[in-house]
Image 1 (tube, rainbow, N blue to C red):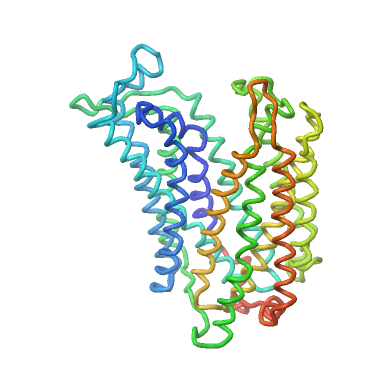
Image 2: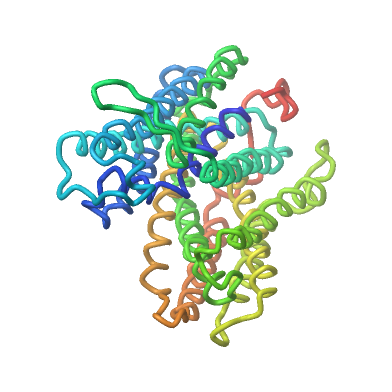
Length: 461
């Protein structure tokens, strides 16, 4: 399951750095404003793929079959995306773009439209395949006992983290690799460059991961009888706390989507955004915060895997939510340019508390789901809500936080209170929902997983 999560998490971020430039080349800049829609096709594919995957899991009762299918779809999507360079290169050779020796064609037609279609379909299919990441979440939920659940959710987050870290790293390295032109005949050729290396690397990872998933032991998807009253109560409870997932994601993305703008203009980590040698410093807080939060959960919150956590997941959820709100306040703008250390410390704390908050919420959510026969659907539902929050958050942030011609960040003093208010409201709502709903309290106290006596988190995944 680590391999599956790593590959799909890597795929999510692999083209993050170059997709804008790749789209401008493929579409010969005919639709520059449609870049955001092309970028969002991955999320759209993931949103559609998640419920379809849950249906497949329910029908086949097999995690292995679903994992293989998701990797195969992701493989096809990335190959389509990378091979869009073939028709694109016939319309406007990359060598001309790279050297600036010729101008763009006047319109996009023929091979240009084919390249555009390949990019769009490839991004969509990659998103559908990427929805397979919830398989790992389902696996760890089924394979962990109630006492080990928070460690299982921490492990799930750590697997995804390393993949999402490797994506931008490989994408950055690819920019410095030499580009090659491979003739294919009939005036067509495949271009290997910084824009096609990342999706091709994802395709290679998928090919390597497929046999590993094929020969790995399967874990059947089971659940209690859907006609049981307890199962029907589970559906109601899951829908009740789903709003917290959307609100928390919106809150986080309001800040994260503007981390580049805030770091460059407000704290001047680099004096020029085109200065690539120092630009990596912008991403230090996300890395530091994420790594430290994973270590904190494993070493301090539940240092002994055989015992219960020192802090229960509900208390941890509320405490980390308060910490996340306070750390966001550190980015309030008191003057045009703030001290760089405020960015490093405040940003790291944001990602530290967000990591703990996310892990605690997934633990609460998985306990509420219990042994419901709809477990795979509930997990896909959370994935859909997270995607929705990841769309709304940046959209709200983009409307509020702006940078004028003098490089002054405006609207941050509005964005931070909005994010904090959304987070606080969701926590209050969750607290009141738990206090007022008897079945929800019972589910959190009871907790459950399938075959907890025969399975353990230490099982080789």
